[in-house]
Length: 531
Image: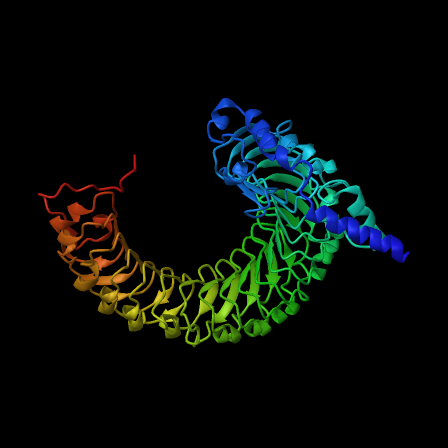
């Protein structure tokens, strides 16, 4: 037995030390591959054969093992603009016995994924994304002889000592037209670390055999037509860091992810997932992104969510969530993006929401719930807020602290029960483009400082109790294209400067008996676009 072991080791070392017998033919195989492509593609591969045994190592897209080892190690033809059908061409590349990486992404190849890829004996990385491949992935691609068969002698030694022969670690085949069920052979690739099949037409379900891919760190099956349950076995992929299953038709309950301690980013949006969010999710200390919007998830947001210390983005909008927003959300020190819009949430928003976020909240969307109480001023902490939308049942005054938001671009707090005057401090927001305070109970005049903003494109103040005259300050407003002031208690003359509102004007004097039109103004009595 020892003698057999020694023979295998010697043979293995010799095979690695001696250049491949086909090594001098590397340039020839590459040229045959080029010549099998359409003429337009041949012109893109400027390869010229010479008598030198190493010239091919310097050809565009070709990498060899070293300056003294002229075996072809990898081919990177990404975004070369190549086209054609690879079914016959690929055989030339598979005659490169030491090729471990093949990148054909970002080209215009069509037809089916060539089954002959299964003859490429040492390939560990294949990138086929961003092409025009169609049809199913051939099952023979991942047969025992594909991507893991070395020379017969090496195989003999590996099998003898019970070592795995599966080499494939990365497979990118996204953004093609691949269809059919995902081959079961995929789930037997035990060394597979990254599998990206997004934006294809795969259908069927994901089998429980997924659990065999124990080395997976990145799984992206998004943008397909996958159905059925998300298998419970996904919870056994303890090395998984990125799980993207969005834009499919998965049903049933939220997947079991409580054991995925390495999970950083999970995206489940645009499916038909129902049931509650399990409390086990709170143990994912590495989780930074949780997107599960546009589903049928119900029940409360787990109170233990404050334990997600790394969480940066929480997007659960367009579900059926109930109950209150947990106070622990305020303790998420890395949170920048919070969207819980269009659920059935009730009660008051935590008063210190945003105060403990070190980077500061960037986007907050709580629209379409039944939230009450005052708008918490903690949202203004950090001075990084870009978008704030809060259409609910909030009451009280508009916080003056909004004026501190130097990066604020969109403020939508319409359809609430806000009272008091429009704070002139809003004029201090130098980047604001949209201001929607409509459908509240605001009173007082329209602040000249606010409507004089040079950046505002949209101003909606209709359906309030505003009084006084319309400021004649729109003359300097070059960007304003939507202005709505109807159904208030304004009086006086409609300023000529409003003729500068080019695309949309919704001042409706019929609802403002104290307003009268300037006869010299080219007034439009209806909204632009009305017939």
